[in-house]
Image 1 (cartoon, rainbow, N blue to C red):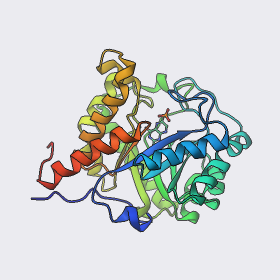
Image 2 (image 1 turned 90 degrees about the vertical axis):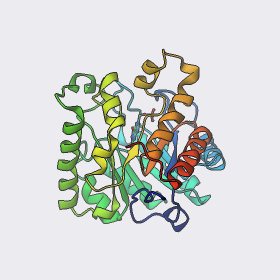
Image 3 (image 1 turned 30 degrees about the horizontal axis):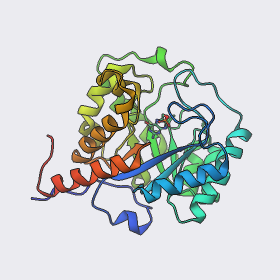
Image 4 (image 1 turned 135 degrees about the vertical axis):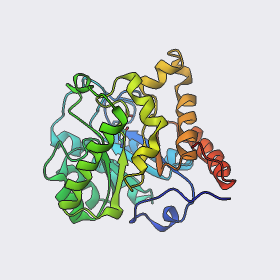
Amino acid sequence: MTLPRPSRPDGLPSHLAQLERTLVMGICNVTPDSFSDGGRYVEPRAGVAHGMAMIEAGADIVDVGGESTRPGAGRIEAGEELTRVLPVVEGLARRGAVVSIDTMRADVARRAVEVGAVIVNDVSGGLADPAMYGEVARADAIYILMHWRGHSTVMDRLDHYTDVVGEVRSELAERVAAARAAGIASDRIVLDPGLGFAKTSARNWPLLAQVDALETLGYPVLVGASRKRFLADAIGDRTDALDAATAAVSALAAARGAWAVRVHDVALSATAVAVAARWRSEGGNLA
Ligand code: PMM
């Protein structure tokens, strides 16, 4: 028995829409201060080269972000964010890459879509900028709506849950209702549990282990675990093994039918996803 293909949003280019497997989204942070790759790709040319290298390595989508969301990070000006991301989005799109823009700002999302992004990845789920839903609806972009409770400067204080899976699920459902009411089509929405955002280390594991609880909301799910603190904690802080740990999560998420995984090391996760796809083709799941 072959398991059903992971559910997916509409509006993807046909070469991705046809795929049966979980997609791999490669992370392209054009920031001086991101969690694990800050400062490496700030120059537009370096950002584009990094994005294209990830496509070569098996990325289906490149996620370009200009504002760090590591715990404690402050905001940057919108103009600075635009200067960082637009040339990279444009350069990648011109070279045929499928580009996602990682931003909380409606204006940045709009300008990125104008130069070729097809996905808006909003870690705030629409909470940071009241204009975001309207902009995404107008652009008819795919919208990744992540669970979020507050900006990076305060998020560690917002980790209060009695039932983390139930609360994340219901807060996402509220955001989806607001996004739909603002005109975003249901077939454009992807949900994300927001691993590490207002969630101290141990909170993330039930969300990962019960990712199907989010899938019951009826939308595709993206998992973003790459190199995060909770993974380091689970493997005894061996930073040299963080990409292997990430790939293990990619395999598990793919076996569970996640739509996409967002990762730094694309080659490892592309391999993990390929193995999980073969597993699923024999009816293997992890229920
Ligand atoms: N995590 C980071 C940034 N953007 N976007 C989504 N959709 N999901 C995530 O988990 C997520 C994200 C954290 O920063 P990083 O770019 O250093 O991984």
